[in-house]
Length: 202
Image 1 (cartoon, rainbow, N blue to C red):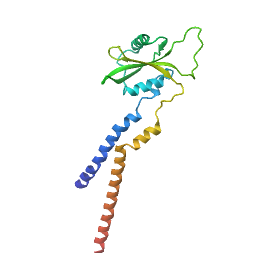
Image 2 (image 1 turned 135 degrees about the vertical axis):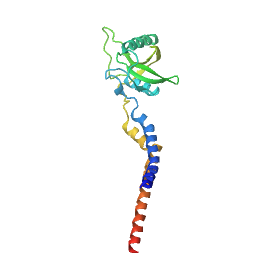
Image 3 (image 1 turned 180 degrees about the vertical axis):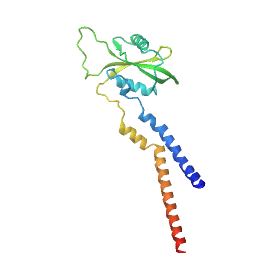
Image 4 (image 1 turned 60 degrees about the horizontal axis):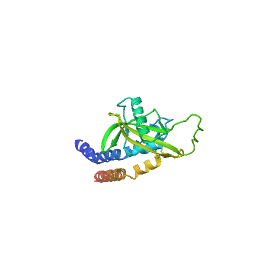
């Protein structure tokens, strides 16, 4: 009995290692930043998602007051470009800057609304900005300004994520190992049944 249990554990060890490898490989695909991380009314959400992914960001509990970080973001933005206003709803994350992981705030910005000016067409591409603020020092880490098309989509591509997961080496090896193990068990069961049948006839 103990031998069978030990043999089963030994046979399952490679499968457990492959499952762990698969989880490490696939988890970033399914937990990558998406527009849902940001406030629904935040401007430049796709620009923010691109920046979050570029800095390998993950959400954390805020390490500093949001209002202070928003003020610092507006100051940093004004020093880089005129006419953009930071959206007050920031996103607290942990991100990589200069090969070091640190807590940070991400804010987005859109053109300021001037009194008497015609409202911007929401269907037309417009200027947006992404501002990064250090979550510990309050200093600006990066300011990115560019155009964003409102029709652009940056949601999680489920089909692409599923395809990459299924075609990943750990998944293919897991399927191959599981299939081989099932065939081996089937062959063993058939041989054992034949031996018992032969012993009964004898």
